[in-house]
Image 1 (spheres, one colour):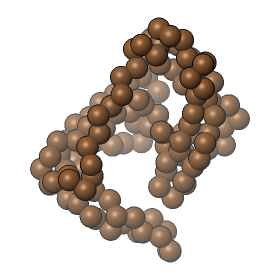
Image 2: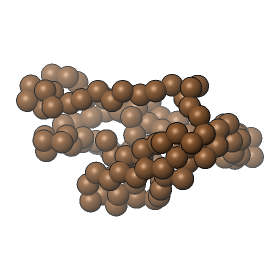
Image 3: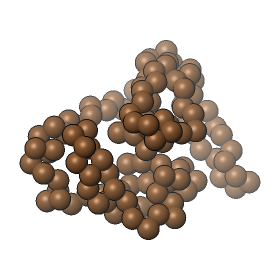
Image 4: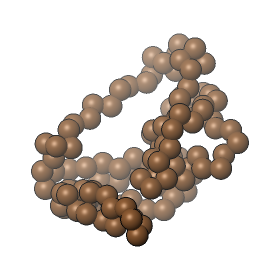
Length: 121
């Protein structure tokens, strides 16, 4: 998963893993309003060594999230490499208008999420 603006208008995609293996990827779906994109890599295109280094992130449920809990934002600040910012959940269920006809219900955090942080792990 990545940001839609990272893959929009791309003619090809490559994903770099922590061990510097680079593999071609394809776009499976996008949502420009939410700025989300799903990309895929065939497992047979990833070396056994790289696969052995991949760790699955353990995610919680946003339904159980509480104000004051810690959050982590992982990115690729300005394309220089992995970046991490941390913060706290400041509010839940914030309704934000993203266009004249669409709104999103979001959580609010004080973790720094800036332009240039996209495309990280």
